[in-house]
Amino acid sequence: MGLCLLGRGSGITVNMISIRRCRSTIFPICVLFTLFLISAHANASTDAVVLPTASPRVLHYERLQYIVGFGGLFYYLLLLWGLVATGLASKVRQFSERAGKYKIVVLALTILLLTSITFVLNLPLSFYGGYILPHEFGQSTETLSKWFRDLFVGHFLNVGVYFLAFAGLFFVINRSPGRWPLWCWLASIPVTAFSLFAQPLYIDPLFNHFSLLSESRPLYSQIEALAAKAGIPQAPIYIVDMSSKTRDVNAYVTGIGDSARIVIWDTTIQKLPTDQVLAMVGHEMGHYVLHHVYLSFFESLAGLALLFPICKWILSYLLSKRGKQWGVVGLTDPAAIPLFLLLVSISNLVMAPVSSALSRQVEAQADAFGIQLTGNPVAMAKMFVSIAKIDLSNPDPPAIIQFMYGDHPTLRERVNTALSKEGSRPF
Image 1 (cartoon, rainbow, N blue to C red):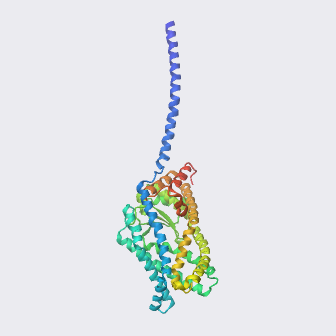
Image 2 (cartoon, rainbow, N blue to C red):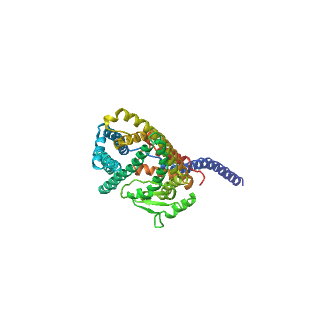
Image 3 (cartoon, rainbow, N blue to C red):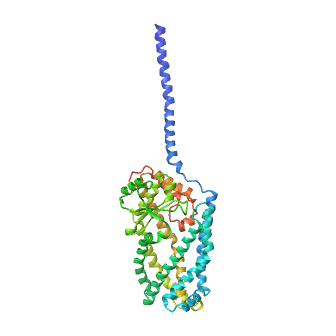
């Protein structure tokens, strides 16, 4: 019996020791398993959306775009200055006066000839930057005939816009030589509003084909549900055929009043997963709900309020000093048009940092709205990663470029901001 009791007692002792050993082993295993689950979740939600460093190919593409963009800008400024300084603008106006006796005809013909000169002289750079470069890097699907069609449509559209703008400007200057900046600014309010209203209805369809989002379209029910959740169930949502021109992905908001609409590129629906498409659409719904187009409208008016008096002062000074030498007899001389365009371009360059900073704030607000609306910050972050890969975008552009022209936060900033909001409450 003793042996039996001893055996039982030994068994109990051995079992207790085993249990203690098991506990001491199970605890760290549980801790490790928990850490593994946390790590797996982190890898699924965070590591998968870490932006890669821009490849040499992306950086090369970016550098070439900068060369074309900045080179084209300064080349255009030089062309405008050269038209006046060489007296060519004056000679063009003299030719127009011989061709037509009415001032309105002289103005129209001068604008046509001056814009055609700059168009032809700028054509090689436009062709390289707009057609050869994106094809070389596989970003464009546009045929040469379509590219030239859009180029010429844009050119003659500019001619028409310039004619209307300068006809109105010269009329006001003649009527009120001293206070024309004020009257021109007041007139710009309805003109700017109409242009924002008309662009999606009459201008954009000249270049691309648009169709309303319909039940036959992919993601129709999800996008409609998202619009209802955002409180804009009646918002017009259009799909634009961009796949015939580019492999990039994008979406945007345009128009004011009854012409306001959300536009989704068909490449976005074709190339992005469903959650990323909805994230992009949620961002654009933020622009729509928060009326960011109206903010752009007021920003334009503020810029024009500064531009008109500055133009008057600078142009009056230049013409008083060099007008005779250039053959330009006054502000309403059509030969002065290149000077007006030169000052507008320089003012846009000077104001670019302010405009870009305001735009970055607006885009950050739309990002936050989209995240709240979809309740999926990870999808938003992954969408930014997809943009970097598909559009060959540098997640970390040079600081000076971002300061001057960065109208969005950098892709890396947008990814980090989205991931920092992971776990936020649903919209």
